[in-house]
Image (tube, rainbow, N blue to C red; front, side, top):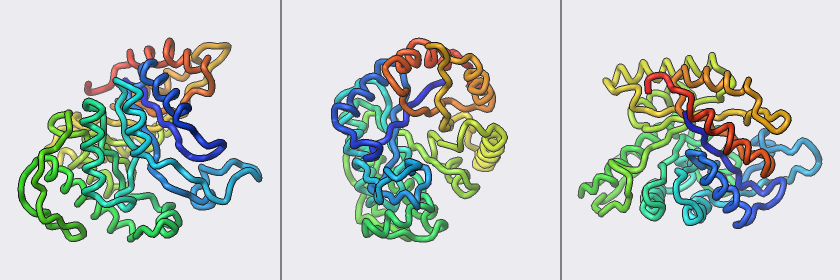
Length: 305
C-alpha cells in the first residue's frame, strides 16, 4: 500500500510562498510519499465550501488559491520521484484540449510523473464559476462533458489525425506528436462517488479517488459497484488503482499509534492501493512519517495485488 500527500494552496491561514511549497514537496519526495496532489480551485466563498471555514471571525470573505497546474509545474522542478496531479480539475474550469496539453507537457518535463486528474466539478462550485465567468451546467451535463473530455484526451494522445466531434466539444483535428513519457499515456485519475461517476470510472479510469477511508461500509459499497461495472464492460477490476482520503494518523509520545495501522489494513483488504493524507504538522511529525508510518503502510499487502 502507498501513502500520498494532499497539499493546499489556499491563502488561509496564511498565503503560501514558493519556498514553503517547495519545502513540503521536497520533504515528501525524500520521505517516500507516492503522490502529491492538490485541489484545483481559483477562489471560494467559505459559505459555499464549509470545509474551508476557519471556525472564527478570521475567515475571509473569499478564499483564494494559487493556480494548481502552475504550482505542479513549479514543484516538478524541485522533485524527482513523486507523482503529481490535481485531485481533481473540474472539467468546467478550463478548456479541455488546453488541460490535456498541460498534462502532456507536465508529464514530459517531469520525466513521466503527471496524472490527468479530472472530475465533473462539485455542486458547491457554482459560486466560484459564476464569479470567474465560467459556465456551470447541471450535474448530469457535467458528467456527460467529462466523458467527452476523456474521449478527447485518448484521441489527442493517440496522435491520430481526425476531427473530434462531440456534443459539447469539437476539434477540427487531433493531429500532433504528444510529449508524454508514461505509456500508453499519462494515467487518468477520476474522482467522484455517485453511480454515474463510478460507471465512468470503470470505463476510463486508471486510478480512482473514492470517498473517505474512515467510512469502511461506504467504501466497500462503492468499490463493489465499481467491480460490477467493470464486469459489465469486461474490464479487469484490478486494472484500476484505488485511492482515498484518510485522516492523518495519531502520533503519541513521538511515535506512531499502532491502532492507525489496523484501520489502514482494513482498507487494504478492500483493495485500496493508496491513502491520501495531509502534510504532517511539523518537522518532527514529518520524520515519524518518513521513518515509521510510510514504511509500515508500504508493507501492508493490498487485496488483489
